[in-house]
Length: 323
Ligand SMILES: [Zn+2]
Image (tube, rainbow, N blue to C red; front, side):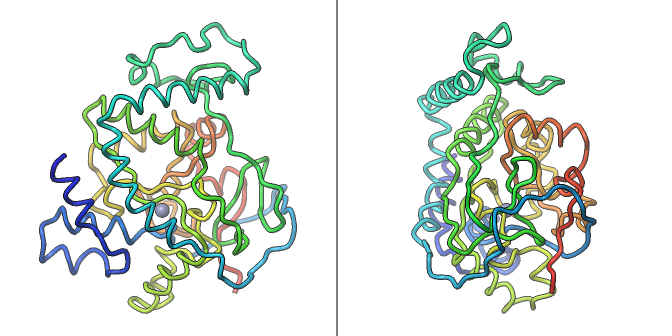
């Protein structure tokens, strides 16, 4: 704990080059923290997919000019890493989460549905979470789909916002981190902590302008072709949707850790999916990212998880830049 806090505080500058360079010099911990602050991008590689399926775009894709910025948001989100982590240890946040979700569940489900609405007590959550079928509205662990915006340029498929290399977001779409997504993450984090696992929030919402900076830095360092495999171009990052979160060190050193394994097996119970799985690089358009989760709500997260498919495959769409 002490170490992590220290790390997160030392992690500082969001614009330093990541990983390797630093790893060598300082302690691994420091390096991880730095990487966390800067890297993950919205993650991505190149390529293919198929298409055809009911895609609804509210309007035309915009590629407006930047300037809506909010680096402050980003700076803030970097700092949240520390706060978030500390929150985990504080029991208060857990209690708060439960209330929040219960209320949502009730409002969505219209009150009564199945037997136990809010009866399940928090203590046994970690155990009761694993279930075979998706929770229904009214169940304590039901998590609703995110809000749908009626904004031209945003693509939804069956109510789910799509942001990948084929479907971009308007430059001025600046929603911040979705509050349900955030709350569900804290639940996930808290349950993981009860298993002795330390999952922390590393990066969430990123504005168009901030993504542009990150991406341009990577292009300058690695060239566009390589950068495109792991970093999204501005307007194409899922982080701009406010529905994606990167956890922990945000690099391959996270792969295979108990936290990564747990995340992969359990994030759907909170309404998240692991967005860029191993072996699906040519479909998602991005390299394997063990640390990037996307909030979709439990209806879809269970369905996608059970299908073993990526979001692209599930909806039958592709993820590839048009140029
Ligand atoms: Zn990410």
